[in-house]
Structure formats: structure tokens, C-alpha cells
Amino acid sequence: MKKLIFYAIVLGVVTQSCKRLDLAPLDRASDLTFWNTQADAVNAVNACYGDLYDAETWAFSESLSDNAYTRSGNGNLVRDVGNGNYDAAHPLMQQVWAQRYAGIRRCNTVLDNIDRVPDLDEGLLKRLKAETRFIRAFHYFTLMNHFGGVPLVEHEISIEESRNVQRADRQAVADFVRSELELAYADLPVNTEYGSADLGRITKGAAMGLLARTHLYDANWQGVIDAAERFFANEAGSYGLFPSYAGLFKPENENNQEVILDVQYMPIRRTHGIQYFMIPPTEGGYAAISPSQELVDSYLMENGAPIGQAGSGYDESNPYAGRDPRLAATVVYDNAPWTRPDGSTVTIRTAPGNGENSLGFSSNTTPTGYYVAKFFDPEAQNLVNSGLNLILLRYADILLMYAEAKNELGQFDEAVWNRTIAALRQRAGFTHPDALAFDAQGTQDTWRDMIRRERRVELAMEGLRIADIRRWRIAENVLNGWLHGMKTDRSSADGGYERVDLRTFDAEKHYLWPIPLSERDRNPNLDTNPGW
Figure 1 (spheres, rainbow, N blue to C red):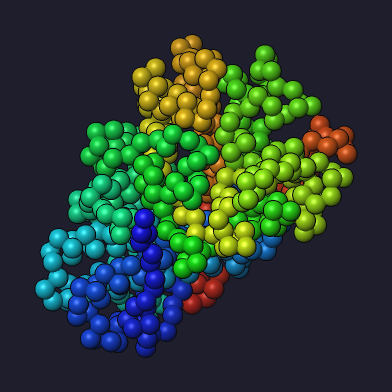
Figure 2 (figure 1 turned 90 degrees about the horizontal axis):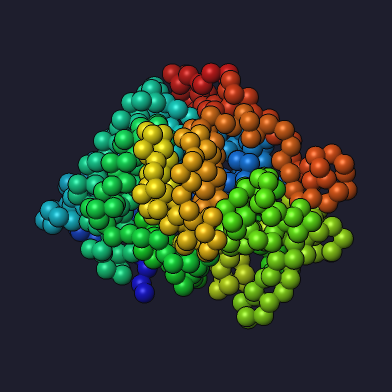
């Protein structure tokens, strides 16, 4: 099956005489002969796709939350931001700002020039504009979730103009994002209209799914429900849960019916190296990204009970037995089986004293006692360079958003349970009737806790946890104090669980990042966020 691979092949042509700006789009294109053919238009839009997400930023973002820890300097020192030790000069702030505005600049160049292409088919023109609008909206959505209000630049501007822009308020940015997504939705095809050569292109489903997410993050519950119901009615495309949770993330199952939006890769031609940061050292990894004990503890028992609930059957001396099947599909723990590319199976030992792979802070150990199993690609070159696509939005998230919105509006019932949580648990491999039965005695509060837990484990290590704990306003609860690793009893502190990283979250300022100092130095019109 041929994948759509995107290359930034036109950037040098379109912007060759312009200086790069971190804040705003580049000055106007100097090559006036570029926008002459249909191929020019398609290539320019294809170049915009490369800005959606780089693999390293995507992978390390989970370590900003209580789901994981990173000891590595990769990902622009995500560790420092995760534990609250950062300021306006931190490189991660600058990286995110610069990358997103570089992407916005490319989209603005396309939207300001694509109408110049002569004899471009009207249907193709509308579709290309819609794809570009979506990508630009994605950039602004990411920026506002980190920084709040940001400069809203809708066209190419000069270098001098870029030094005088001001921040729009967050609501204005959110309104713009939603307006752009609605416009894009109207002109995009559904997923089933694309052939294999166009896999990975933006679809109606992607636009409606991101629109649902914007409403979710702003607690507009009816907006979430309205967007989700377009999926249920097949108006946004044809999607459903992939039968195997573990298989969903395997190379042989890419572009399956659950994937709504992903970043496309291809072995040899376009690969990423995030696998190196996740898998055990004996299997070719480094373990720069280590799942936390807090994440592991959030997985239910196979009977649907939390591990701390009376009668759950949880045994602290055998902690991984009888758990939610998604735990084994996501996390490599002590005594977990590991299947190598040649089909042979080995046992991974992470308990202290077991040599390579065991708990520790050296290069061939794991700080938490856990590795990531979820995205392992046995076909990766040298077990590192993988062509595995990175999923940004999938149908399971639509179901979880819908369940949360229904509960917040007091409309969660057995029908919603069956459509959402029960369906996800059945797909995950739960068979115990207690795990699949609707709790008719539940309350909005107990259902809220259940839905949030389900969201955490279903989407673990997919980069969404940090946004969830921010919008739920619980970050000061889960990002203050020690992040833990496995139980070793080497210390009596914290019940014998390893202390890995001391976190600090200041609710007065950490819900938003500071505007990068370097950007404020360039443009004194940029104010910063409270507390910074």
C-alpha cells in the first residue's frame, strides 16, 4: 500500500530570499514564477504537512505529565518543564513557538498565493485550501493550549510588521481555530474518498475530530456531543475501533479504520528514532522516556475494580497479574515477555540487581523500572529508525470525549456506557462481566472519575495527558511531590516505591507557559502570562 509521504521540496524555491523569523511568517516570496502549475500547488501544500508534529516533540510530551519521566536532554529538556524548573528563557518554550509559527508562515504563503495558479481545478483548489486551513488551525490550537493568547497572523507579513504584532486574547484565537476548521470541513473529502496514494491527507474526520477537541478543552460539552454525533452518523467519514488494542499501533495495521489523523512515515525514505528512547537497552533502546508508577497504578484489575478498592484482587507482591490488558500492551514491566524481531521471546527483568534493563539511572537501565511497549516496530532499521506512523487523533478519543461530555451534562446512561466505555473495554480484552456492566448506582462524580481513568489508560503515552490535567485543573495535585518508580523496598519512604523526580507545579503561573524571552526581546509589544 502506497503511503503519502510529504517533503518540504518547495521551501527553498518559495522563500529563498527571506530571512527566517521565529515569530511570524516570512516576507513575501521572491520567486514569482513558482505558482504556475498544479504540481506547484500540491507540492506547496505537501510541504505544510511536515510541520504538523515532529516525532521527538510528540514522544517526549508525555513526560510533561505524571505519566512518564525523562532523564534525557532530548526534547529540549522536557524534564525541567515537567518538574517546574523553567522560565521564559527555557529552550522548550522557544522551540514550540518557533516551530508552530514557522508552520503558520508556510500555510499563509500557500493561502496567499495558491489562487495565482492558472487553470487549477476548482475542486482541487478548494481541497488544498481546506487542508492548509486545517494545518494552520492545528498550529494555533497547539499554541493557545500552551501560551493562551498569541499573535494571530492570517497573511504573509513583512519583517518590520512582524516586530509590531500583539497577542490576540485566547478566545479570539479559539474562535479563529473553530471557524477555520468549519470552513475546512465543508471542502474536505471523507476518508473513504481517498485512494491509497493519498493516505494521510486531511479529511472531514480530522477537521471534525479536532473541532471536538477544541470544544472539549473549553468545556463546551454540547459542542463535543454535536461533533461526535457527526461521526456516529457517518457524516464525518467511516471510522470504528480496530479489533486489537495492541495491534492498533503495529506497522502492519497502519491506516486502519480507527485512525483519523496521523503523521505519515515510511521505512528508509522517511523514518524517526523515537523507539530508541522507549525500549529496553538489551533490545536496542536507551529508556529516555520511562512510564511512571502513577500511570501503572491507574490500570484497573480485570474485574474492573481499581487496585485500591476492597475486593479488587490486587496483590502488591504480584502487581501485574490480573490487570487491564492495556497495561501489558503499553508498558514493559518486571518479568514481562518481549518478542524480538526474529520471533523469539525473552523475559525483561527490571527489578534491581538484574543487570541490563534493571532499575537505575545509568545508560542501560530504567529510572522507574518500566519501558514503553506501545509503539515497538520490529521492522525498524537497526531497531531504531522506524517508519511507524504517529497517530494524533483516533476514534477511541471521539468516544471518550463523547462520554465525558455526556456525563458533564448529566446525560451519562447505559446507552452512552455501551457505546463508549464498554466498547473500549471489550476491544481492550476485558471479559469479566463486572468490568463490562454499567454501574446503575453510580453518580456523576463516580462516573467522572471512571471516565478520566479510562481516558488516561486508553491514550497513555500518546501525548494528551498534559492537556487533560490542565483542563481538569488538577495539575497542582498530580504534579506536586515525588513521581515514583516500581516498588523495591530499598527505602521505607512512600511505601517502598522508588522516588524518581520531585515535581513542582505552581497553580498561579504554570497552567500557561511564559512567552519566550527571545520573542519579547525582538518584539516589545508582546506581554507575557501572569506570574512570569
